Image (cartoon, rainbow, N blue to C red; front, side, top):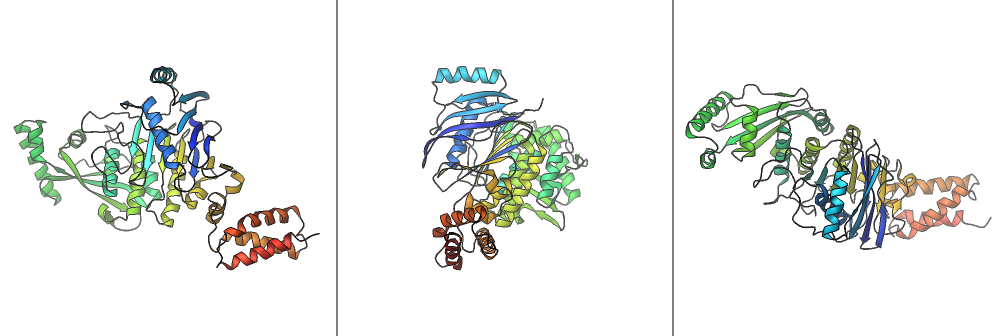
Length: 460
């Protein structure tokens, strides 16, 4: 049975508004849902994401955290799983917490997986997840997955993060298989679903590790050197090609897929480069990609490696370092992901009206954390332009705002046709009156708007 998961409500003490119950969604069903958190800096967006991650990690992670620290503002999380409901009480005592966790996990009331996706090196997510770490074996079915710029040892560059995502994809299965998720993720950003990965053998480290004896080491070096000479690459390197359309890998490799996987995960094979093929154009080496492309690829390929039906996905500032054109691409890619998986809940913290306007009309709630009403009405955002979203969700009026221009033009038409006393004209007048003082003084639209308001509100 497919897991259908959703967070229905969160009790939180917001920095600007105090204690509030945030309605994240109405219920869980087969449709994936989104909750978008907006507001000025310091309103608690990233803090809520962090505390959600900490709470679900404490209840359900494969590797339980050593403490429950880090949850300061969120008191309660209400969840729905396959039409059953449960409450995570974050203020309970340690004993009550353990008993509650046992009951909830015993009923199977949890998301299939928790994925924290960040596009900023300053995110607040806990970086220690259930995937590969040096001090313990790989967890084949991790619950908590962190896809960000941090790990337990150092910050990752965008390049390093992409290499890690591709490495996770390459070894997601013990046998090669076609993967529609990866094919669509590559297509959305303009690449063929083919990667060429180059590894380098660290012979000194292999010998120190005792992973194999000297005879095995010599035989392995010989196989790799012969392959390298034939391929025209460095003597201790080998290149591995994978086509996700057909689940095919390079059968000419001198060592097996399983050997590459084991050597890589043991730190004895080092991932040194990745070549990607554009749909139109020449192959591109990873180092030549822009930071925006690196962010998009690493984030969505990481999602492709781990995302399943019924997951909880927390996304922090997806617009970070993205040009507006790439923010639109991001929305397109997220739409692709939403279509692929059922019963998931995406919680997104953003400052970008492009992100909000692109996602808000798809089973989404937009919550504004710095003023009432907290929930932005869906009819306000449905099919809205970025200018309209900036005005309605962020309460920000930009110079030459096209949404305001359209309203002023409609108002002038109502005046000209004698309909300036209609209910529609009154609604427009009241809305414009609430925004006119926010229009920049140097914007000619400010005076025109004031005149239109006066014309609409003249006595009958």
